[in-house]
Structure formats: C-alpha cells, structure tokens
Image: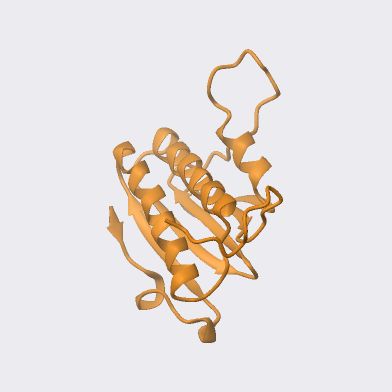
Length: 158
C-alpha cells in the first residue's frame, strides 16, 4: 500500500476537508484498505469530534472492502482509494484502470457471489460511476451517524 494523505495529510474542519488516500496493488491489501477506513473514521471521531456510529463504521468498511475488491479483481494495475468527510457523510471513492462500468445484476437467489455492487448500493446515500480519461471512478456516500438500529451516534469506536 502506498499511502498519501491528500493535501499533506488530514486537514482541519476549518479548511472544510478531512480526507485520506492510498493506492493498493494486491488483493491481499483489501484488509489494509478496511484498516485504513477504520483508522480514518476513528480519527474523524477522536480528533475532529464528528459522531461516527458503530453501524456507520461497519457499513463504510464493508463498502471500502467491496469497492476495492472489485477494482483488484476486474482491473489491471493499482487502484486508488480516497475517503473524504463531507456534509456529515464519508465519500468513498475508488479509481481503477478498467474503463468498463460495473452493472448491478438481476436478483437471483441461487447466484453465489457477485453481490458486491448490490450491497454497496443498498448501504449508500448515493452512488455514482464515471469513466475517466484512464479507467473509471466509483463513488459511494455513507452517512456517518445514520443509526436506525439504536446505537448512539457518538458511541466509542474500538
């Protein structure tokens, strides 16, 4: 993993942006991508004082895992992961070198696997895909303190 935090590192709320980025080149680094998300969200809460529910912590790690897995599985070369806090949510953006946009498949209870895009779309406030001059960029937005399950939004993360 090559980690390069945008703008020289995480920035304060005064500048309006809290973000981190990293490049991943191997499928074994999917766990590192989840760990980066967990560490970033822990800092968002502890350092910046923004509430992050336990549910949101899990959902964001799952979205990161699914998007990075798809990028590593279907695109040659590295993928780039960026996490950015904006308007009470985390934007999870993954760039990879494959220009073909993913498509959600029709519901099939007998299908084993290939449900990642469906899972991501179900968990996110918004989801978008864009072709880039090289490859594509997929962005999913997950609310930080959305917790209809009852966990306190400011619940301590661990």
